[in-house]
Length: 311
Image (cartoon, rainbow, N blue to C red; front, side):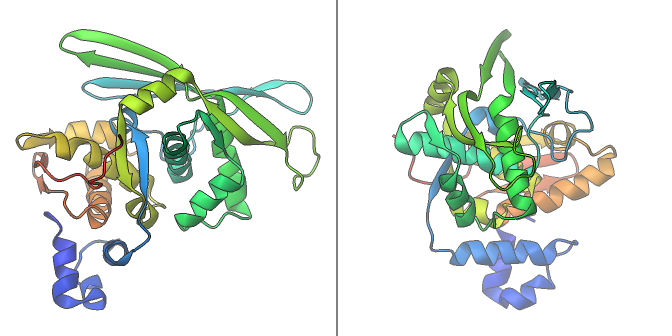
């Protein structure tokens, strides 16, 4: 799919007919995302650190909560170390690294809210629920448990970014959160040890880096691809890369698989998954000018998804 084709299909054939014209198992979902985004009048701007646009968290729950997550691209290596919490009996245990779509939405919320208020202190109770509600995430039951788990993992983990620029290597170690206030969960059985994050204070270094390297995101776009972790990663990457290009640039399939294909072993399976998630990202970023080729993805200079940049 090239340069907003799905939007042209919808304008030409209508929403219902277009569902039959887009190939792939997610064809109908891609059309729905594009049509819903185009008609969405609830305008909002979110932000994410540019480092997260060049790397990614796991898509699925890692098998071992104690394992360090590593993702290496041509210019950047990300290490995420899981934090530790005390169990009801006082025994320390790793909580695991953040993963999946919910973790990404919480990270976007933390960064967006910090920049909106100009404060490192971010509320993770009702304010987070309101934000997720705006994105169409119904917080209740299993979703409540997942949100609390991911907030806990984010609050306790530690990041290492290894950058390589012009032959020079730069190492940045930082926590996302310096201080987190945990409160008892009144709905959890057992009481002791059942805590959730109510307030988080972003680390000073992360906050300052965020202020200098924030990438604006269309909140409506996030809303309509909220359930797909890979589509969120691709959208954020395109939001970061496309508007800064002076000329077209080819990204090889190998590089794409390295950045987006964690957990997908076979290249043919990755190509299919990436293509569908790219189409989802394009569905909510109409100005994204990209072309799939046998050699990879050809990026063309494009307008950013959000014209109003952070001052």
